[in-house]
Image 1 (spheres, one colour):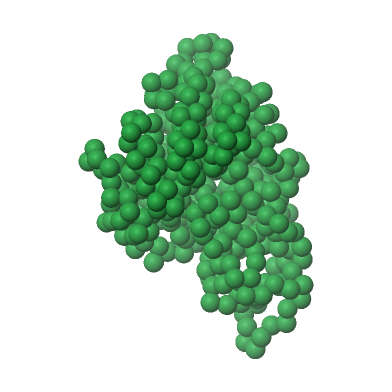
Image 2 (cartoon, rainbow, N blue to C red):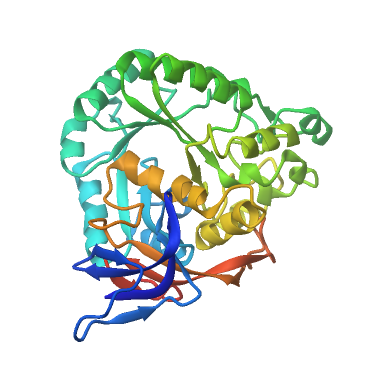
Length: 407
C-alpha cells in the first residue's frame, strides 16, 4: 500500500511525503515514492496523515459486553481513535484472566485495538497482578478507597512488573457533590465537590510514586494546585504524568447555570481562571489529553441535575473537537495535539505506534482539514455544532477502513 500526495504530521514533523506500508508496518517515507508493480495506491491529495489517536474510556454505562465494545469501537474510529485504553471499573470488572482473554478475543475479530487495564483488588484481596500482566494487562488502576498499605503493595508490583499505575485522585468523602463548589453551586442549591478532594489525593499518590520509583499517571487533573504539587514532586524525582480532559479547556462551571445536565462531568467543570490556566499549560505541564469518554444512557442524563449521571459521549468527533477549539485558534499546533493524543499514550503503554516513522505500526488517520463534522446529539454539550475537519480514511495495522462503516 502506498499513501501518496499527502502531508504527514506527528509530534515531531509536518511535511509533504509519501508513505509505503507493508505487512501492517510503515516501511518507507520519502518526498516522492514510485509505486511497485500492482501496488495499491491511496491518494491523500489535500489531506493530512496523522497517527491514529489513543484514548482511555469506559464502554457505555460501564457495561463490558460484546455489544458495548462494538459500539465504543465504532464511535472511536469515526473520531480518529485507533486504540482504546479500557478502564477496569466495568461490569463485570477487568480483574481476571478470563476478562483479559475476552478483550483479546474481541481484538482478534475487530479493526480497533482495546488495551486492558486491570483492577488490583478482587474479592477484597490483592489480585494476581503478575499473572494478569503476563496475559496482556498494560496498567493497574488504583483509587483512594484502598488503604495505604494496599496501595504500597500494589506499587511494589508495578515496579517489579515495570508497568504504570493510573490513579483517579479523588477523596470520596470530599467529592460527594455534583458541581464544583463555588458561589455558583450555592446559588443553584447544588452540593459541591471541593477542590481539595483532588489535591489531597494528588499529594498522596505523588509521594507514593516518588518513594516507590514507579511511573504514575493522573487520569484527569483539573485543579491548579494539583499541578503545583505535581511539579514539586517531579523536582524530587517522581515520575508523574498528567492527563486533562479536553472539555475542561473549553467550558466552565457557568455552563451548568441553567441546570444543564449535558455539562455534568466528573471531575466537575471549573471556573474561568482555572480554564485559562489549563490552556496556558497545554505546551508544558499537561502531558496527555482525554475525551473523558464515559457514555451513559440518555435517560440517565434526562433528569434533574442532582440525579443525572456524570459522563460525556465525545469519541465520535474527538479529532474534530481538538482541531476546532485548540488547533484552529492556534492555542497549540497540530504536532502538539498529536503528541497529547497519540505519541504520549503510545510511549506510556509501550505501543509501537503514535508516530509516523519507518518500523512503526501503520495506525494512521487521513484528515480533510477543509471539510466539517456535524454533531447531532441532544444530550451532548456540542449538539448542533459544526466542527472543522473530517476523518476521511483510517488505516489500522495497514488495513484501510471506511470511517463511515468502520466495524
